[in-house]
Length: 336
Image (cartoon, rainbow, N blue to C red; front, side):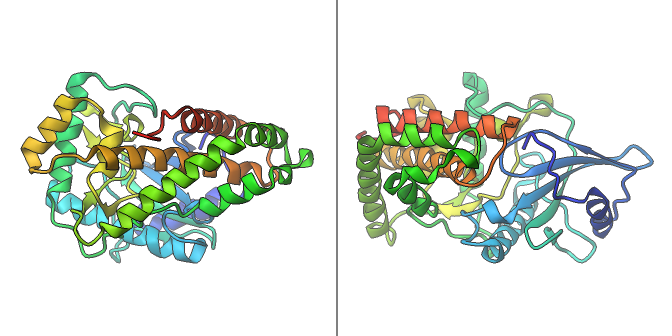
């Protein structure tokens, strides 16, 4: 997140880092990503670690509420830490364990802390188009991940959309976005009203795909997927490709990752050569559609509550407009 949170006590956060043997001299807020809050912790010797504080109240892919999200996120972090022993630190950046072997600690009932090695390397940004060489390396990295034996803790990805009620409620009554809630509320109302019919049709199309995926679940191949392998979750120190940000890791069809990594036939052929699995165009389109619906729901969740005009809400509004545009134009896998 770009905005520094006002409800996280950095003194308490610094104290919590002691469980990892970290005694930071400074905590510097890092305005990156969307969803979690980040800091760089520096100790007296200049050693640095990357600290992530997850908002359990906004982790629907990990659980329906903060208590369930804690369990789901713990499993995800433990999975990622186990994957490092299988794939090596040259492939991914995963959470460090405390002295007691934990990968996640509570900061408050709402927030949880994980700590990662600090990698001084450039990262991309969401929406960035990778050049063919970088794209090929990413596909090869995913083939390596997908061929790894799943750790016992790996969460299972569920077909469908955990945040579907958010979209349904917003479409049923767009007037719930009242002006007094904040500067983007009535913009949401107008956007939803204008696109109501098209968005309802998209939901019906998505439900059909979900039903088909559920019926094929017993025969479909599932692998360890990252969930969000876009350019913003890739570090590239010295020509390597390191995957970061593991809260969405789950057992799922390979297409959950592949649609976001590439749409180039030569890359998908390379993946098939490495794994023996030929990506299914129907599933690629399904997961692209699911992504856009997820983005839409995340923004609506923000604007349904009281909200200010900040860098984060501006980013959420841009994301909402992009998602609705993709969904209603058929650019998000609809009808493919």
